Image (cartoon, rainbow, N blue to C red; front, side, top):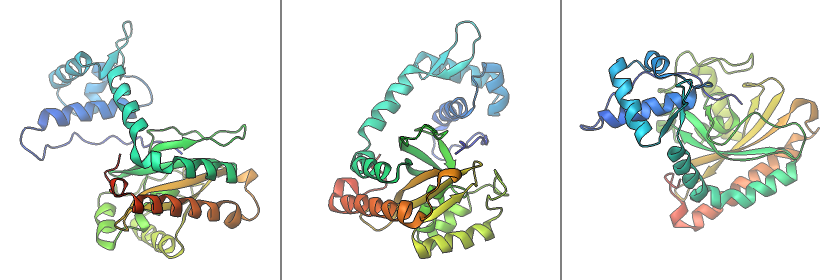
Length: 276
């Protein structure tokens, strides 16, 4: 599934004293989200900030090793310190640790790639991926942001929010909705209809809505308060999809989600949406 490639406008600080930090985060996000490394000049054009501001921000990030600069091309990449911090966060993720055994079992039973995703603003972000044993691999990775409206994990999460929370999230989505493939849902009215179907049956699909030939099934994980905190998907290829997907994919997916939700419910320290 493709990562989000839209570039947000520079954020406006909501709390006094956070403007500099917001600039740091905006610059880091741009470097992380672009497919190719950029020079400071290119980053300045993309960021929306004045060039002197970008130069000062990048200099500070380089000094803290949150960015790295190629010695010959001057192009910027995420720095070793940031990668170290992300690795530690990923390794200590309580949700991931609570889910890992169920995810392995789901991958083994279905023989397909399994993703664990959590909400991240207008997206879901993968925090775990277990590859299918098949020779054909999925083009995704841990840390990838994916759209709420077009993915099985996004729709599974959105559908199970209470009405007020769901509406609040929907109002933040870009209009018109990004359209990746012919099957991608096109507008909020259609999306609301899809979410109601997902809410009724308890699981969602991505029917080649992000990539040709890729079909995914998704279902939510609930916290102790009954609110969705994450979602799991099983991703298969159209040409090798089994003839009874309800038995082959949906049933073991729902079983894995129930097992993880139960563990979260029984472990107070793991029951919050802030368990990363």
